[in-house]
Image (cartoon, rainbow, N blue to C red):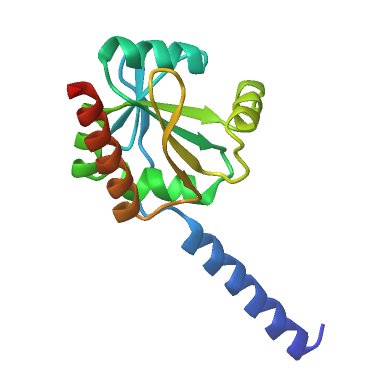
Length: 165
């Protein structure tokens, strides 16, 4: 092996190590079970429900809108949301108090059916649903914290207005 090819190999190895080091999450994504009904993603409580109907029924019982996140294990923006949005106290407070939160694994059978139902072509897709499964708000793709909170606030305001009528 020539000196030049050894240097190229060394540079390649350093680049690979650097890339893997940079892609490692800044902090461990918290995803833990907190009860038989809920689990945490960051600080946001997500409902463990077998399907959308059960999630809507639970949201109806609590008289809250349903927040749905379509995700996959390989979705980088989903991981960023878990790490950088769902870990924030303000986001957790708003979502835990004002919504029933539900995640749909988009690449599983139930998720594939829901993707067709709601025309989901991008992961993540975030939906805010009423008690009949109608879309109150929708975000395609990974939103910024500000965008997500603006949508959530808008849905909460509309929900409160419709509740008072």
